[in-house]
Every structure is written in structure tokens, then in C-alpha cells.
Image (tube, rainbow, N blue to C red; front, side, top):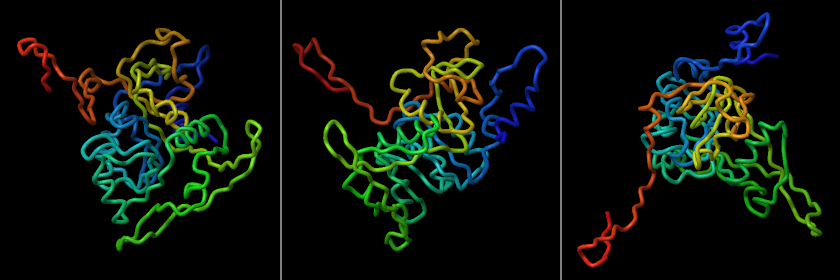
Length: 289
């Protein structure tokens, strides 16, 4: 069966007589996210405020969709990134590993307005990668002997503060590992309807390059989405990215949105830390700025 992205692609680019057209660039973020409907599941790249596909998130927010299930390392901050969707109660469920910088997230979770599945960070990364690699499940030692494996992690609270829904127990199995018999827990892969990611550079075929720490969860989220949309700071022509420099091949990407220089420069810092500055006039003493 051809999915929505595939149907749209075939309609836009019918079978040619000589060569296949692979230009995945769309003119605007609004057009790129136009097929995301209420109730969709999303994998979203980023770590803290680094590598967040903020332009696509803003376009999605303007589109008015709601009842979303979002898989992302965290949920932005109160007024930026996924935080703007959360603020307006567009997100029904979050699968995350860290949620400590968003007060509204805490409030909604404790008030029973948001369902949250907390997942160990490395496990979350591997669940996304496995989904993109066609691996339905895997065993890991992470979480064995805790509520992650035994069940009981609160997923949703009732309005009175009691636990309305908690995580189920997971399958465990003993296996030989480096000459010892150890216990491992079964974790299922994650796939989503759509994925939103941000890249430093991308070409019209969807091949992407991420810059330094902005790489983080972006390639993994892109792999897990059935329809992946990438906003790119620098759009180049096919062949301008050396094959050995590609971090994510275009087979995982269905749409590419070029960003304006202003959009690319809009990078937020979660916690600004500065170094002491030497003051020569004071004999080498330091002052903080």
C-alpha cells in the first residue's frame, strides 16, 4: 500500500519516460506539514534546544492540529519548540527521556491533562533506530530490576493526583553475555506517522548533514517516521555533498524545506554559561560577565 507521502509524491512526479525526478523540496513549511492531521504521531529531533525543527513546529502550530502523540527526547521550553504545542494543549501523549525544563509540562502531567511515557535515553534512541531499521524489538539490560521492566511507572494522573494509568510489566529473559547469565528486558521499536527534523545542510534528494551536537536525535527520529520532513539551513544541489559526508541518506526523507537566513540564525540557548574574563588593569584578576 502506498502511504500518504508516497501517493502525493507519485501524483506530483508521475513516472517519466527517461529518468526519475527526485526533487523533494517544497516551497514552505506550511505546505510541508499540511498533511499532518489531528491524532497523528510524530517523531521530533532535537536535544534540549539544540537541533530543534522550530520552523516546522511553528507551521504545525499555525495549522491548528491537535491530539498529537509526540516522541522526542524532551518537550522544548515554555515558549519555544514543542513547548508552543504543549502550551495550547495540542499534545495528548509524550514519549520522552527528559522533561525537566518545562514547567507547563510538569503541570499538565500532574493535573492529568497529559500522558507521559518516560523512557531511558539510550533506550529511546535505540527504539527509534530500530523502527527505522525494520527491527520490531530488542533486548537490553537497561531498566532490569526497576519499574521500567517490572511496570508501575505513572503514565497518566487523575485530576485528584492519583495514578490513573501506569506502565505494564515487560517481558524479560536470561541470556549468556560475556560468560555470565544476565537478565534483559524486551523493548519494542518506535515508528510514527511523521517525523520532523532539522539539518545543517541538505540536497534536493533529501540527503542530510547535521552539524556537531545538533545531530543528536535528528537522524534517529528521521528513520522512525513513515513520512519525514526536514528543514535545512543550507540547501545545495545533488552531488555537492560528498557521499562519505552524508549522515542520513535521502531514502529516509520525503520532504525538504529550505530555511531563510533569519530562520537559520534563530537558535536559542537553554542555559547560558560564561567564562571569567581576565582584567589586566587589576593585575590579572578575573571578573564575571
